[in-house]
Length: 630
Ligand code: XCC
Ligand code: SF4
Image (cartoon, rainbow, N blue to C red; front, side):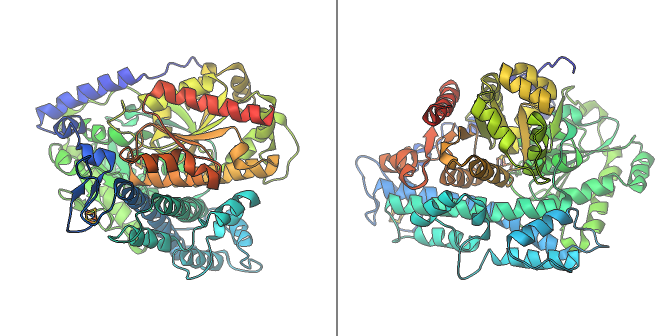
């Protein structure tokens, strides 16, 4: 194992500064500049006290004007805004899950989309009580896809996946009346409740926020994760690399960005095709490099080892390298800035989804029926664009780190089994991990998730928190842009074990894992939910008793708030580094940081001071250990 030299945030910032010089040369604008133009932010918006849900408004709450025209007070306004925010996130993740179900429905043995993990499909079918005996695997896939799609709109009952939770958790959800019904219904109910003249009582708005969040995490996102595994394979540990240096100046660079793996899987497939590689060579390149940004990158990194060029706030940087022939996007977290920015370079900005259409892009509509053809067309366009590159604008920062990724729950259980060498069945249990935690070799675990946000020095919070956690023998499971921050810094290199406390280091050596485990994209936080459910079942504890917390230090999207709600509702204390626009209401603050604990045994902590945030997490983990007498 070589010596590890982490890439520091300072080094990444220096690389960005160099790229922004190129930007200045070609007249490109970047988020760093736009942040300045938007500062200071609107105080009413920041506090969540502006209401514009009816045309009598907008109403802004101040000491002199304590109620809106309809008489709504500040708590009702902040609460409604919070629920709307959640609904946006739940809708987004869940619709992504729905797209995956549609892709599964279209899978054919000789088609572009196949069933790559039939075992997992059968396992889920049995879990759902669907007959599998003697059924053709594709017939079963279609039946399961249809059954899953019904979860979005079924008139009666609650989400099927809830049964995966420990009984105690299910009972808490039932008693608090937050068991999610049909996924679309929870989104629609949320929008109904936040209409003018409906709910303005914080308690009711918070309750529905948890329920809509659960419809995401234990509904739509879980469909997204589980059926993506069925289609594209369940991730297993695989080596890859991260940071801008993964782009290759000699090759055609295609960057995939967004969330839905249906597109990126096909692009990767064709970029690997000898015919396409020969085509790239005929255009003067040495080959084709596909790399990724945001969660679509996590998806293809986990399954194919495709390198990760960067996370959310690095998306403009890939174009600023001057070496990006095409940035191909599907849905979510895509800066509209990429349109005008790509026009300053030779880069083709290719949008593909009717859901994410943007000015100044080439729109190549992608659908399951024509996936192969369109992916090939996209790869060809990128190859043909190689000759348009302006060599004097090319600068790829020499900056990359090795990373081992691909820790799906299945892979994690299998890998950790090596720690104790205990004899377990094929599916395994989480008992080895529990042993490590009870014995104190590992003090606990933190789920690090979420985005970047210019309000927090980008990546700094993710990286610093993780370094301190692992040094304190706390294992980190990460997803989304948090996972990419870790990978870019080098924390997913197995050599990062040297940054750990003695206990965690030993576990990393025995199991041959890095101390920060990449569990996937943001819909894959559903994997983390199943992990804690299994830990609780295998240990006989309630989820809320486990020395496990969640953290999103740099979050920015509606999806992140939906995630926060389902993580809390699952019984996991959740720590945020950015306030979710609730500072304007003491009552909302009280509900989220304390009140919800009576329902779900967990709550939020908002702490914008990163040093304090990490200490609070460590304290919480130790408190939980003390309560258990371990
Ligand atoms: Fe988007 Fe999922 Fe946030 Fe990253 S972490 S900025 S939501 S890509 Ni989900
Ligand atoms: Fe104002 Fe009430 Fe209309 Fe909101 S719903 S904009 S507070 S009048």
